[in-house]
Amino acid sequence: MLFEELPLVPDFRLELKARKAGHWPVAGVDEAGRGPLAGPVVAAAVILDPKRIPEGLNDSKQLSAQRREELFEKILATSTVAIASSSSRRIDETDIRKASLDAMRRAILSLSIVPSFVLTDGLDVPPGLECPGQAVVKGDARSVSIAAASIVAKVTRDRMMTRADLIFPVYGFAAHAGYGTARHRAGIESHGPCPLHRMTFRPLRRVEIVEVAVEIIESD
Image 1 (cartoon, one colour):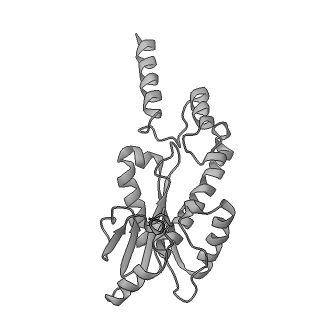
Image 2 (tube, helix red, strand yellow):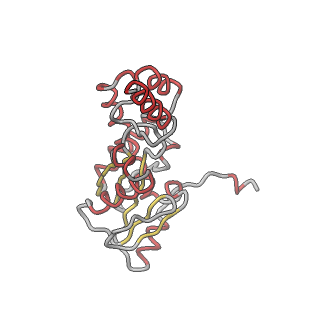
Image 3 (spheres, rainbow, N blue to C red):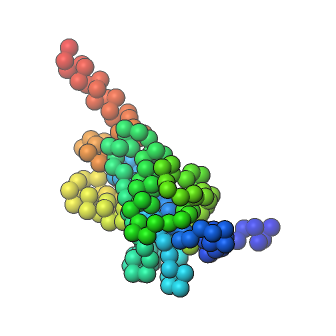
């Protein structure tokens, strides 16, 4: 029981397994930003150099912001990396799952080195790829390639939301990156949503319904 409670530590075994099966290079893929009320979902694809894997790669949620920034720079300096995002508008037009998978697909296809195999975090392999792949539950805690992608996606998205805070300061995006904190919800209640908000997400759907009702009342 004790050993079952130990946290997973990502390693290179899944990549080596794919290589043994004749697939090389292998790209790890992950996204950041499925849950927030505002901002894009960002995906990253990373092909690590087996001889230059940065030490300390792990699920981005298990790392401090400072450590993520440090590893972000090391990943970019030693690996092949591509990043893509789906906007809040695209999320509303489709849904968060489809928007996330599309961003992952575009990140993979944007790599300067064509992967022979991809490892993705979660339950899905993006459709429309030119190579096979494997979805790995808790992949960012099992594969260093996926962990690297999770760090790149997280740091990139956090930087995007920090810049968004300069344009829409009333919501505090730099502090919470668009997640539904009390401060963020208070900003929405006081100022209404901005173009970065996902109007199909609760509680924003309620805001949209109220606005429509007000328009109907005012037009009568």
